Length: 305
Image 1 (tube, rainbow, N blue to C red):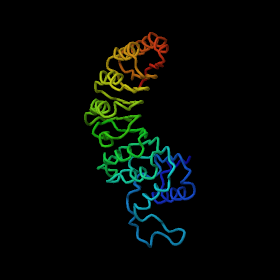
Image 2 (image 1 turned 135 degrees about the vertical axis):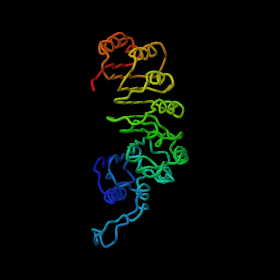
Image 3 (image 1 turned 90 degrees about the vertical axis):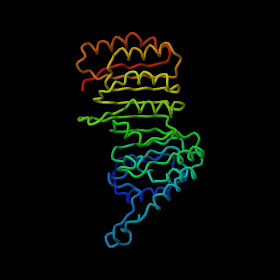
Image 4 (image 1 turned 180 degrees about the vertical axis):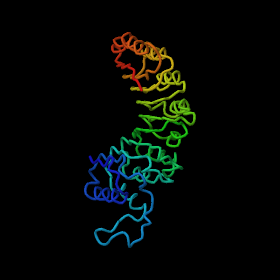
């Protein structure tokens, strides 16, 4: 296992490290973690246009002069089973990194953890969206692949939509809105959840949603996720619940239906709603033992912003 997470280095240095790893242990290395490995403005697909006279000499010469070397790195890591990296590190126009991985790994890649950031939105700041056909090709080679998608500091559906497409085998989806102090537009997060239902209902197992300062009415949409995603085993919701009765409705559904859910965590923002904390505690007490007997663990709490 190798982790270069959050080192935020120059792209040439990161690629140099990856090349060295590929040459030394590429045939045995199984897990590589690269979230935040490249510095903020160092997309690995950018070509190095630095004049030769500024690159140093001999052993100090900067090595990466095109994206070809970056693509070649992935052909050397032939035993990967787990790979974690930013979406932006894959986002060339054709999905070439994915295609190289599909060709080299031939079914071995089991988990791909993708970090989606606002400053790497495809076709805006962070290169191109990965074509859906590239995902289809990867699935043909690695049919057991599970993608864990982490969307960080994005609250608007239009942003989230840029990262997803129907053929991505999303088994875990985490959405963190970040602290949105100024709300300029509608978030339309209900649309995001409808897309999850439409595209990934046959595979989604874990959904984590943290929506701070959200003022859209999402209660019914979130309740619906319990039955709309039949493979769901874990659901975590943190944010505003407009009607606390919907929390009880979730518990009632779990007590009545035969679902695969094993864990439900709801943390409700406690604003001016008097008695909210007590109501949540009452629901927890009423359903905790009953659901535990069905193999479902619930954790219902409140928090103050």
